[in-house]
Structure formats: C-alpha cells, structure tokens
Amino acid sequence: MPIQKIEKSALLLRCWEVFHRQGYHHTSIRDLAEATGLGKAGLLHHFGSKEGVMQAVIDYAITAFRDYVLAVAQEDLPPEQRLEKLLRRQNRLAKHERRGCFFANLALETGRDGWFNAPIQLMFAEWQVAVAGLLEVAWPPGEAQQRAYELLLTYEGAVTLYKLSGDESHLEGYVKRTIAEFTTKLPPTI
Image (cartoon, rainbow, N blue to C red; front, side):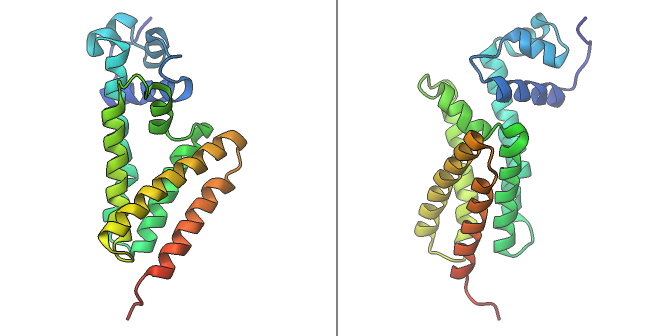
C-alpha cells in the first residue's frame, strides 16, 4: 500500500537514485512509485508524466550539485584547496555505486532526443564558470575559461574509464594532475 506523505526532497532523491541506477528509458512510473512509496496515480498527479518527474529530478540534482560541489568555489580557502575540494566532491558523486556522472549519463542516453539538453548544458556551463573563476588566479580569464572547458572534458573521460574498469586511479589521477598544474602556475605568496 502506498504511503500517504513523503517530503518532496525525499521523493526527488529517491527518483534521482532510480533514474541514475537504471537510466531514463529503463525506468518506469511503477519503478518510481515503488521507490517513493507513492502510487502511480499519486506520482502522475504531482508530475504529470515520467518526463515531468525527470525534469523535477534534474532541477533537484542541479541544485544539489550547486550546493555540494560548486559552492566550494566560494569558500574561504586558498584557491588550490578550493579546487581540490571541488574536484574530490564531484569524484565522490561519480563513485557512488560506480554510477558516474548523472548529467553525462543522461546526456548520453537522451541527448539525441533533446528532451533534457538545456538544463544539462546549463549545469555544465555553471561548472565551467565556477572552475574558471578559480583558475583565474593562475591564468588570464580567457585562458582560464578554455582550461576549465578542457578540465570538464578530461573529467568526463576519467569518469568513463572509471566506470568501465572500476579503477579509481583514473579519478584520482585527474585530481592530482589538475592540482599539480594549477599550483605550478600560482603566483608566489608573500
């Protein structure tokens, strides 16, 4: 029997976990209803369709990513510590049950359809801006933007290799190489 009440954040987290584990196309409304304890009718009442659930999950995931990963860029730490902390947090998300990057997985699965491309592109753009802001202490703004873009591509490659092999050294190597290059370009401290 479906439960009567569930907080929206808990509902979206449970749906996020199902979509991340099974993918969009392999997830049914029944799967989502079972994960949330709601009946199918209750879930559809709130979101209208599976696509509506996914739109809400993407918004929830972006907010969670901003709060957990991107917010680190604004913390009161030296830039190299903020960058390393940001990269390690995103790695922690990718390593969760070896699922990889939720946004990249969804883009690979549904990108050709275009249903969810805009919010995913926005999230990647926000990541690039946050990282470029950190890199600007070592490189001019235009170069920092380009380097942030290249880091995003390199990160997704490291995640892919990690997912294929289960070898965390792909993710750890990405962090170490990034931080090593960054710290060699930092201006000397007085």
